[in-house]
Image (tube, rainbow, N blue to C red; front, side):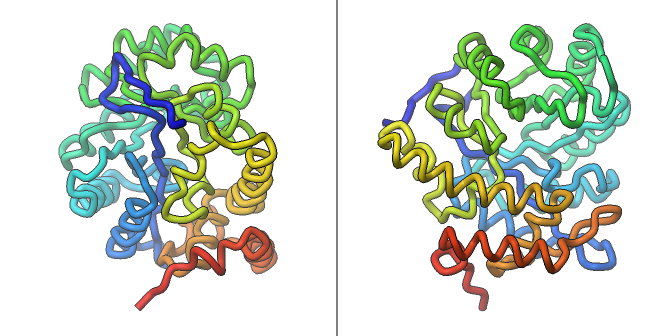
Length: 313
């Protein structure tokens, strides 16, 4: 049973899969745009309903405004309208975020992604809401709201998010908060307005069962071209089947996200299965040989290297 949700403030339907692809860099730091196009095509072939461009996996924080334009233009040319894309434009100041949002809009982006003030401690509700309102007024594109306590040190509670949605065109939410009270309340209070997607490995399956709007979880894509169907099938699985899926997904996402500073592990994993993910841009260093060995061991145990390797010409 796939949950067929209709949202009052979004064109999305049902539970969706929105990957956040990496941005390939050469060892010297140059953008690899042809490789980027190949990466995006791979994600499109893995049931992606939308793409988050230049997010944390995409090292958007390391891109200049001109590079963000190039990445956005490459994404738009590659995707060619098949799915929506959201370009992450968050910077600490509103002015910088607005400037990047304008770059994305001028390049043709159909949507932007914004989080609260990154790295600002104890921002007030009024300040957070005003930030989203300012960006929305300057660049009135559909918005993916990104709730990440790791980067912002505060949580977009249902009350704050509701106030944001009253002043900004929020059409989806990426939520990485893993507290179960928060998950339940968020879905209950706002789950009918727009898809509230989960990114945490420990809560993804639970969020899906509770009726969330889907997932932006890194690691899902390594489960094959039908990865979305596999995870949405949790509604019809037995408890044992759900446990087995969780016991597979947990080690994969841990290996690619937590054994080294992101996105070095994810890039190493993508390179491992034959994709041209390149290396991270400094100050993040490539995954060490020990981390690569650990990822390879997990992938072999789960069967990823044997069953889902990419065949490159």
